[in-house]
Length: 152
Image (cartoon, rainbow, N blue to C red; front, side, top):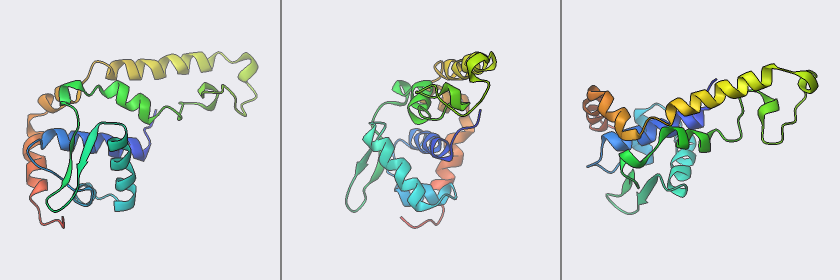
């Protein structure tokens, strides 16, 4: 299973914000730190704000911060929202339709569906807080990256 670039960036943003709770970060800063295109990162941060994972403070000195405590952000739930329309194979999509000629008698789709659910279930055990706490060097690394000469 491969996550979309959108989901990858969304995870990076929430981890970054969780590891930098005392600092507001602009979308431009986050995009630069993660070597991502600003326009793509802006779509990601807009989605995170719309879904209630982040909040945006406008004006001079504004930026992004988490809208929820890291202990309240469940990674399985977040990824299910992000990847809801991207099944591991097309026959597992919401409509259950696809172009595969094996669909009428396939035993593989149920196995892949179970594997996909196992992936999400394992992430259901993780909150953003647990991820940050399990990687003590992450806060220090992000603090260093946050202070590099990056335009606000």
